[in-house]
Image 1 (cartoon, helix red, strand yellow):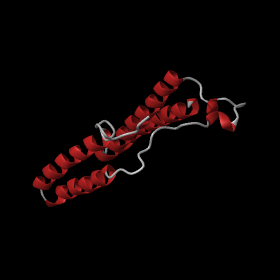
Image 2 (cartoon, one colour):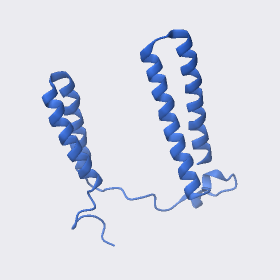
Image 3 (tube, one colour):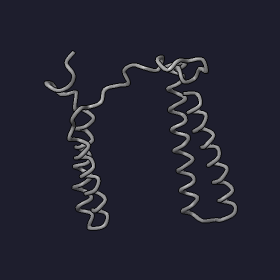
Image 4 (cartoon, helix red, strand yellow):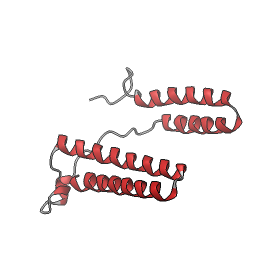
Length: 133
């Protein structure tokens, strides 16, 4: 995990330097905005990995003498059959098409997208659903 957060923070630093150089040489707003957003995104990902690394401690991939079996185990819970990702994809397409066809479609698509995201987020929080232990 240490390599990962360091890599993303170095990428953020690289993007920041490129942004400043581009700003001084090109004076073009769209490129500066894109490079600034890339800097921020790389920094956010690097910070998240750094925060997670501090919280969970050293991982097997951080040690040179670690064995493969040390990284085995449960990785998390993945839904075996959820229809919510399809609903999210459909409403995202509807919202995107609304930008072309009309604002009324954006409002409907964004509302349904919000419902779909909440449905996916709280899918296993409802009674009668989820993993029974």
